[in-house]
Image 1: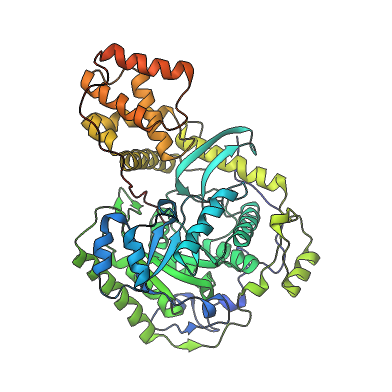
Image 2 (image 1 turned 180 degrees about the vertical axis):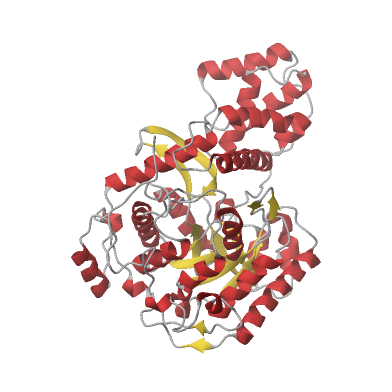
Length: 533
């Protein structure tokens, strides 16, 4: 049974679970609770990434469902758009109008999987780069997460999570993440910022806190941070992690901008829904962060259950107020003794000697991971890959739960993944719930239980329709005709060949002799696939 990957000893220069950099410690003679008091604690300024970061201001996540409202909102300095929903050659008219008015647009990726065991996919990186260039964006953002596992590295089936899953805070996982970030940085035309995610589950035997993990990631790569304060709250409720301690340990000078979002609690579990108003607890964490550093940008996320524009404007006002209040009571301190900057980034990895690591930190050089000369070994990637594949397989394929994980919490996560998969397929293929009606959701959940996702959501929608037709469901002839017509219209240039195609068409005709008679279906429309993060 696969367990959490282990790693060798850390070089002395790295922050560890027992030793924090002096620059991140509370002032001498100050107790930790007092150091966390936002009103009493001075803020820092530094010469690291934050000093040169683009000033963004206050923004909101752009979604097609509320595009018109966003265009009319006063005081919107910038927007963020889910990268995977954009085509560089056919950008939405709303985004083009915003750009013409001088509103900055930042592409926000959700599918790169920088925390995964494999190196980032070149095509996905090229697509992210093309969107940044088409929008004239000052930076792009992604997540510290894995979204797929398996494949050649582990000699197991490739599985897609359809969700952002946490990486283990281990030396192996950190080494892999650092190399993947460097590969992405080399491929992108603008700076990269990476986001902390919300998690329902914890890896056993973790070697670092989130703050320590992020500190070292920035130190070794010079990457900027997108800090989601709603995710800090989520991890406080779900994993018992202290948001104030995370902020104590973070290199706040590396923050590119901040996310704020709402969620809800059910049975002691906080769900980062992006479909509810921002709670006071999240605004409190935002104020705590703003008391330490002046964030270059703050953005409100909303992905579902879109309220009236005036309600979103009220939330934006609350966000501005929380930041302004915190900044008004903050006192500026001199820069920390060793600010984290891009110049201090190193290519340290587990199989690089401590002497070599120290020399690379002194010179500010890093090994070119794109050239394949990074210190990250294939064995380390395989250890991370096996652990991630075992976890994802337990979540989506019903295989045994890896040792050390909370079985009850994994069951919650598994149900959440099924629900999200059904919801997003209904968004990218809205005709399916229209055709099947109330039968759509139970039928899709039954299908998904037995068939883990191995491709994208559009492929998943086609697979579900094929399954329904081959399984001789639905029994109603009219519904079956409509489902068959939908499948034939959308199976693309490479529909299932030979036998399977013949079986599908024959099955439809046996149940519905009229040649696919029935009302025409609307052509597919572009729908947003919400990213969580």
